[in-house]
Image (cartoon, rainbow, N blue to C red; front, side, top):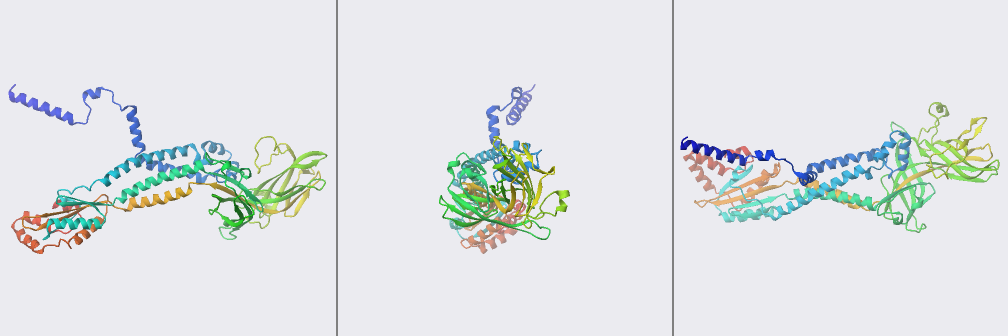
Length: 586
């Protein structure tokens, strides 16, 4: 083998070795080894994925999607009555929904998991971006490229002003237009539009603040529900709530002293057209007091979505219904029960189920016993001829023809058995129904009508009152959540509509004493305003560096000497262009 052949082989081996070093493919030794990133590597990979913008958006979408069941399925915190009705109407789905937490979506384990992951993702995304943004603010704008003519937006002209004067005027002009600028050599570098990143960071920080506000509300807030009948009062005490939901830092001892009395309930409905029967107005007229003195009352009105603010809490109107007033006497004529009984609405026409319980004061053949009455109340009872197919029911939600279909029982109400009972249900398992001629005793009563009990005593339907269901909510983080929401919207607007852009100005004095001025612009995102902005700056700058017509004329005369000079002078005589292809041609 000749020396030339040996040198050639050596050269090929060197090139092969260099190629192997530059290649990203694993070497033979590396491929024979076990490849893996280890536990720490997997943890880093998982953290990078969790704190990425893509995963944050996915979690935000999942959170909004997870909130949908809370708007469709009735929530215990908002209306236990609707939850109880949902249980009775969907007995097969209710156990599954209970296990999935569908009746308390916002405190369920799966909603909390998405909530916490989104919080961690946003924090992990904000911290490095904020640090990076601070570094950008402290740094100078990027220096001017060597060939400004290659940028998408470009302008140039020749002037008799010296380069130093042009650069000083350019820097002052850019600063007046709120550009961050710096001078390096024969060029001015400037940048504007940092509010875009500020808006982006503000949006994410506001989301985190919103999540914190919601979490604080859950930890330091609470709520309770109570049914108040017309003419009755409520005092903010845990014993007067039908249902009370405390939190970690909000207990029965944290309740603020206040109260209110339901003076009347006003409701109106559509009477004609396809929307007949739909509610057009609900209002609870109340007298309330802030503090422990009920004599210092103030009149108020509670509307749907317009709560009463008192004692640092909000009182919401969440439901309403009817409460027939029943009077029961024993065989001796003594009144043993007299008062309204709230009934549970079953349909939009307010057909309601009633359970009236008389615990004591009644005797049958010398033996103490309890009475129970099950009824169907209709504010506008249908014609009895329709009972065959639908039973007693209401045809309109307003009390135009209030009637009560009622039947009675005697025996043990099981109210002392220790088993929880609903006030809307009557346990007749240990009771006997009253009969007349071996037929169940049933009556259809209008106000001021009644009937006699077989074992003595009377039952009288004396009138109708309305009841309202109120939710008393203590939400200390509501104001913070509102402010965070507004800031998030403002940040989103800034990140969408503020355009970040850079403009460079270069001024070079040639051997002939004429200064060539070049302006170029670059937008960090697609924007048609960069060309307009550059043209405006060029026109303003010509006040300090006017176009030298004689220099332009001499350049035009010299342009006839060669095609190369013609191409160069065309670039110099151009005013503004915004076409990348034109820039490359020049």
